[in-house]
Structures are given as structure tokens and as C-alpha cells.
Length: 229
Image (cartoon, rainbow, N blue to C red; front, side, top):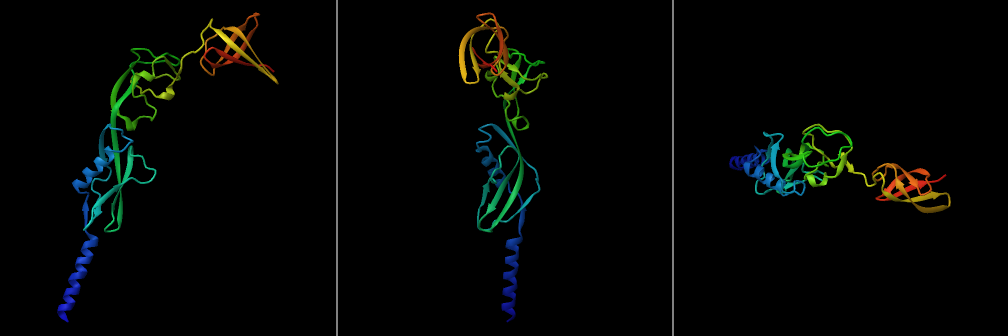
């Protein structure tokens, strides 16, 4: 009877130990997490550094099983993010907060650039940095900036985003234009000459063939829309 009681006690001790053992994040699990992040489409082959937000975080033991790495639904692996570690054998799941740094090229102003200025060679340059700290629309190559104009002023070294740029004038002073006159129940077209420059969506003045000057909206290159009451 005493032997049976000792055996039962030993079994209970082993049972409790199996479910209470915890350890700091094992190096092989940490390395697997970094490989998992590197393969994520969000970093797109960039140079990546992963910082554990809780470096002393402990996880339960996964006795007799292996730890699976998952991404929580709706979570983007970019900047401050979260990974999930799951042990199906022991039926546990742990969230691991991380800070992901993704390094790559992006475009900055090489000097002060004023509002409305057209981007030309020498105005911008490419540097490398942590893209996770920048706006999502930051330009990665200078090609998209050339021949565009700034919608706001930028200080030297400021990153340039797609929303900081707009198309340069598609109509210049003196350009021949097609004028579309639209009124209640009618639409006619005519020809004229641009008196002011403008981009798509801008209001410009145009002179008709008879000398009359109207104001209309740039619909597309070479075409002005004029609403007639």
C-alpha cells in the first residue's frame, strides 16, 4: 500500500512538472521567428532586424511536440507587430511582441524644395534607412518624382512621398485646346487658346476664336471643360 502511494505521488510530481516548466525563448525558436519574418511578403526581401519587445519573456515547455509560428489575423509584419507561438501537443499559444526593422532605399530632398517646384536632377537623392519608420507612400526610386511638382514645401533630408507630388502642367500658356461647352440639355465643342497654365483638375482661362475669354477645368491634356449656366 505504501509503495502504491509513493508511485502515485511520483506520477503526480511528473505531471505537475510537465505542465509547469517554463523557459526563456529558446535561441532556435528565436532564429525560426526571424526566418519566418524574413519570408513575409511585407518585407519583400529587404534587410531585416527583429527586436524582441520582451527579451526575458518565458514560454511553456512543448514536451513531446514542436513549436509552430503563426501570424495573428489582420496583423502586418512591419514595425511593432506580434507573432504567435503555438504548441499543439500541450495545447498552448503565446503572443510574442516584436519590433521589425526593414532597411531599404528611399528618396529624400537634397536641399530645401518649395511648394509648386518641379522636381529635377539634383533636387533629390536616394539614401538607405528603416522604412518602417516612414510613411507607406515614401518613394523608393527617384524615377517617380521627376517632372512632378511638389504639393508642399520640404526641408533638406525630408523623405518624399507619392502624396507630396502632383502632375506638372499638362496645358501651357499659348497651347491650342479643345473646349467642351456643357449646358442644360446641350454640349458643343470649339477651339481656343490657353491663357493660363494648369494641371488636370485646375481652372484655367481660355480665349475663344472670337476673342471671348472663358474659364474652365482641365479635363485632360489639351481639353478644357466649361459649364454654361
